[in-house]
Image: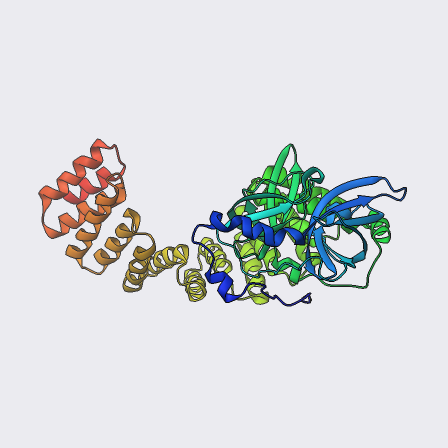
Length: 478
C-alpha cells in the first residue's frame, strides 16, 4: 500500500492563470523566474569528502527535496545548493522509489528562501509545452524548454513521459514544469549503450512515495551496496526507458541483469518476459512470465503474459486457462477477454468465444478487434442477423473494404441480395484489389440474374489470376 506524501496545493491564483498569454513563449521568462529558486543543485561526496557526482532536484515542501536516486546512491554525504549559491547539507533520506529512480531528501532550509513547487497529478498531453530547470555541469539554474513528445504506458510498470527538452549530465532530477508552473515529471538522463535518453517519471509517483524513518545518506549507501534489490532496480529502471521506445532488444539485457541480481524481483521477470515475447522468444517469455506469477500469484498482468506466450506457442488450452486466471483476479480488462476469445476460437468453442468478445465490448465498447471477431463468431454460429449488427458497429470504427464485405456476406446469407450487392460494391470501391469482395459481388449478381455484370467480375478476377475466378465461373456456368 502506498501513502500520499502531501496534498497538491496550487500556488497560482485564478487571476494569474487567466492572465497567462496565449503564446506560452511570451510569458516563459516570468515562469522561469518564479520556479528557478525552487530548483536546486545536488552535489554528493564520499567518506573522504571527495566529490562523487552532481545532479539536480527541487523543493516539494519547505524541508523536502526530490531528486533521482542514482544521483545519491554512492554518496556518504549530500549537499543541496540553491540558485543564489547558498549550500545546505541533506539531513538524510525519507523515501526511495527504486523503480521510478526517485529519492526524497530532508533538508533544513531557513524560512522564506524558496517556495515548494506544486505537483500535478494530471497526465500531460502530447505536444504540451514544458520547461526544465536543471544544473548541467554545475551551471546552477540552467533552463531548457521543449514539449512532451509522448506519454507511454508500460505494462507492469505505469506511465513514462518522453520529452524533447535536452537533459545534460547534472540535470538528472530536475523538475519538468508545465506552463502553469506545476511539476508534471522528474527529468532523468539515462545513458544506455551509447544513447542519451531524455524522459521524465510522472510527478504522481512523488505523491505515492512511502515515507519511512529518516536514514542517513551514508547508511543508505552502505545498505544499497549489500541490497540485491537496489542493484536490480537500477538495471530495471534503465530497461524501462528503452522499453518505452519499443527497443526490446536493448531493454532485455537490463531486465536479465535485474533478475540475476535479485531472482525474487517479480517485476523484472515480468518485463523480461514481455521483451522476450516481442522478440519472438516465446518459450523464454513463458518461463519468465511464469516466474513473475509464481512470485506474485495475484498479479493479473503476469497471467496475461502467460496466456499470450502459450497462444504464440500454439498451446491454446493453456492460453485460455491463463487468461481465465487473469480474469478471476481482475475482471475489468477488455484486452484480456479478447485474448481469451482468440484462444477459445482456436479450440473451436465458438459459443464461449462469442461470450468473451461480448464481455470485452461491455468493458470497452470501442474495441474494434472484439467487434470483428464477434461478428465472425456469429457467422460460424449461423446467427447472421447478430453478425450483421456487429459488423455495422464495426463500420463506425473501421469503414474499410473488409468491413463492408462482412456486411455484404451477412446480408447475402439473410437473402437480402440487393442490399448485399450494394455493400459489396462499396467494398470494391474502397479496395478494388479485394478479391473476396469481387467474388461476392459476382455471386450476388448471379443470384439477381445479372449474368453480364457477374461475368465482368469474373474477368477482373481472372486477369488478377485470383483463385476465386474459377469459383465464380462455376456459379455463372454451373
